[in-house]
Length: 136
Image 1 (cartoon, rainbow, N blue to C red):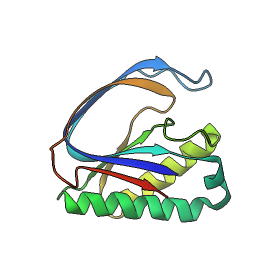
Image 2: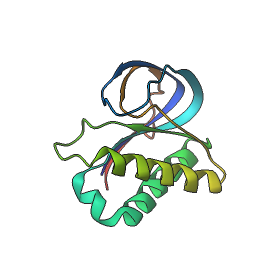
Image 3: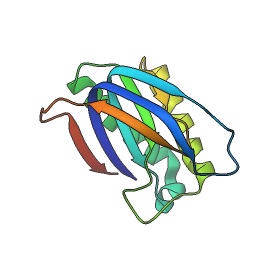
Image 4: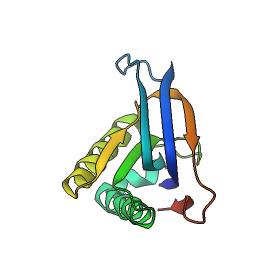
């Protein structure tokens, strides 16, 4: 798994282009303030040990949220960080399990619509812990 985390003072997205034919049609426009954005690329190798991958993902997201004094986390599928890609069903399952576990830990969690390109607008401060990349 590849994980690009960005702390954003402001994040807005709007669905733009559906990329997977078998997913429901969604039209969504959402704004979230003071959140850690997890741009997550689930790789084929992550399918073999989902529990371990989810635990590491959650640990990293919580760590950056703590460093930026927020309890808001956004999970965003970003399959542009590697050539290896997991099946969409696995990605959705990993995201849903991660969201549930984070919520059980007291975090406000949301997911951007899966299977869509989005129009993005974000403002991130120029601080050392506003952008972190992890190869999980």
